[in-house]
Length: 501
Image 1 (cartoon, rainbow, N blue to C red):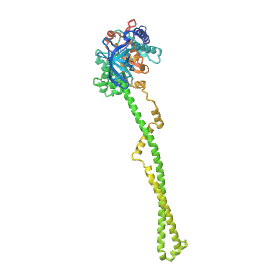
Image 2: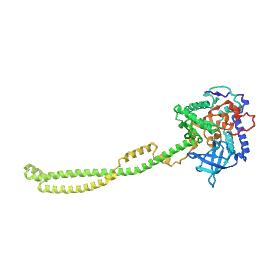
Image 3: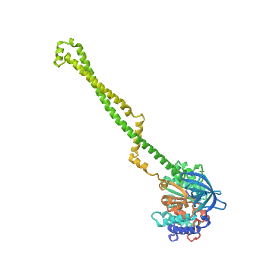
Image 4: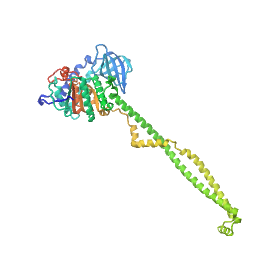
């Protein structure tokens, strides 16, 4: 990889990151006052809006402006539809011919004619200046160590001040210079893959959204070539303006699309869990009732078995008495004498026979009652074929998730689309530097590495604002010749304010 590290000039001759932040904040505040009330923030009437596509809660509209009107990218604006419809807020992502592409947070329908657009360029400058002031006022929250290494390069006017040094893998600030844009981006893609494999969180900033879309496609294609699932790692913060780049569908790599898919799956999983829990609660009393009835059935069947045993014993006794009476006159004398000795003679045997038959009648009555009860309990205790396996599976799942109390807490928890937590889990976030500086979400997330694509075309303020979010390393990419031609990196003596871009 073609890379060089910045070597210091004498510290007394260099501005620090804090110095540059103070200078940029002052310039942005001056520019804000200058822009307020000018034509840059004047309402634009007779605007036609057309919905391009929708992902999650975001919508991309194409705004056809009157001839001679224009709005810079990343400028926040308000769209006021006619007929007393509710206005919506949005941000400009770019242009396609004479159409301005705007990302909005609310829908205004499929199309809208004769709308009024109110740009808020002054608001963008004020928000950006406030972020720089916050970086100065909260040194413990924003790490300016890597940004201090960037400050000398941002004072350069041609890039000739840069000297060769250590390789990209060992320096805090490294540069990737090449004349060909495609070569630079391929090198950035290789570097991004190396950093992802090293488990680094990367913020990649571009000068505009078209460049960001193109770089997303290049990186995704390179990751696909080496067997990495780019959908897992790469996130384009704004809605993509292009459908595909280098054969890669990049709209599905949008942060909103990924978050919408994640929370849609989360809601589906939650709905599935709710159905399982409700089914478990439905089956629990049913099976408990069936279990109790089974216990009753077992007890009645045990009673039936005992009654049948007693009845069998009595029937055997009746059989023996009947046989004895039938053969009594033919019994040997000694046998008859032994029977009489125990009180068994013809008269008593007939009494025994009546007693046994009476007891058998009573037992048969009790057996009839027991059998009727069994007939009632059998269907009540019967468990459908698939109910028990279903219940066992549900119970196993609930135990695995921590029990019914934990599941009730999960189901009771409010669904909160936490954008900060979601973006913090992205490995590679791609956006524009001015969006990083102006979007409040980026003030709360931190990264390990900053990669600035086409850095000479990014103004000092947003580049420093992005650098303040990283704690390990900054990579600057571009064409050295663009530093002078773009004129966005100025020396400390330069008085002319360069616009936020």
